Length: 124
Image (cartoon, rainbow, N blue to C red; front, side):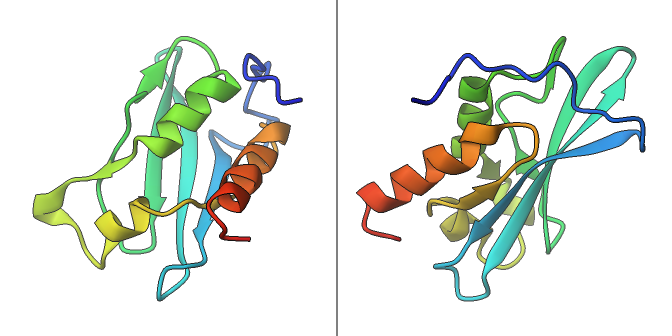
């Protein structure tokens, strides 16, 4: 059973100021698009950003937080990402309509959640 209230204690292991929270791969995309979700701490707040290969400006529902996101909040962050249409490169808007394969060291059940969701839509 997936614990949607799971919240990591921290994202950082002392190796740097930025943490990779999740790697999203969209295998149905023509080019196998990938989007990475990162976290930085600025003035005591966690700041989140999503970056794709083209450098598109992706809007996130949770841009910052006082504490690490719960699994449910992380799922919402991923599922509600949007590209700023005026500056998007490639076909990121279509890519974001897909269901990604997800890897995350910080959220053990994130991969399981999206794998099950992909199966429900006949994608695995």
